[in-house]
Image (tube, rainbow, N blue to C red; front, side):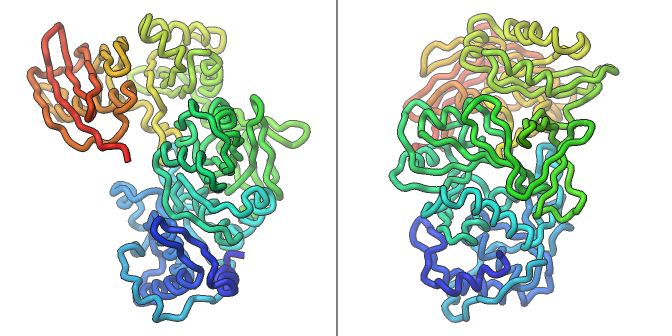
Length: 549
């Protein structure tokens, strides 16, 4: 039980429970630091503390110190100013352990007292809509879920330290990278793997590790260099595309264990994609059913509501109890009075060899219309380069004519390298319709170090708003950011952060509706860019990127 964690740790004070880059943290030091921070918290009248550390060690200290002080930890989905303002009434004060001097910890007695099973942790989920939602979980419920994970997967990760690409303040990260390892006595490596290159290094290392990841990182690994990895991979927060699961198996010899769940329901099911359309298997003790609308209902030992919880997913249950995900319940919309399944549109389009990912959205402007945000495959990008955007638009439309009525055929298309996602790998639906990038109407790949794009700049681009009211002009900063965005997409060595801008010159203004060309050239330190229209230079600059570590 999580409530008895410190009694458990007190029996093995010399056990290594956290591994920092510079040193290891023993159980004794962890318990002493928790006691020190507990005393610090008891000087305040606050009863709800936002635990804002991102490092897993200081986060864990803060989390358990708040509980030890008899208060309630609150975990926000991020630390953005907008989120803090929106949820300011959700907590009384903020705790940042990394900003507190803990050097006197050796002078205090280690915390070894039991916590109360009914104590709660509040986890705010961000979700795809961006509206935070509070989920209050008891230590008893979280303990039951951790016990099930250990029973199902414990033997696979025996002796493996835990390393993560996900933050500890989300439900998945909290359970898999903090609570379950602490309860089962596994060492937690505190550094977060922010970049695919870091994850690739771990997978190619000799040490077997338990990797807690999300599709956002797993889909971006280099599949060209094959090696056998001794690691175990968990993936959650979003469904892992079949092609990415198979790429991991082919490249590293590892089949990721996918966990289906949410902050509201906790863990629901798991699977390993060894074949196309691998169904999901409910976790031990979880009962999955569906209603008349195929909406999924979940009942489990870690859901306090006896009636269960309705998920936002639609499912089809097989005779053996396993199930397929059919999409979201909220994917059914009305367009011009006609009932349309956005999920059906997406499933049809994804069947094309030219498409890797797609999201269908309903735009409500002067008339309702369906728009598609598409990630083409290599074959799709080749078609865009050779025949232009209209050719791929027509291919998708032809595919959909047998699926939806004419009024529901997509009227707008946007082609991206990746879908906009949050840190947990969930597609940000609210970000899809915003026109923040120009339309790429033609791609002329000259070489690996040079590319030339034809851009159509939409009249309703958000960056024209307020710049200026009477005569809208494209800001210079936007031109620079667009150049960086496309350089990152098309020039292989330009994905690192910008370190310096040695040259920047704006010669002519760019107005709404302009069609222009963007030329990008890779340099030894970064890239050069130039915007042209009708052979006349509009702006140019050079950008240096940080050196790869």
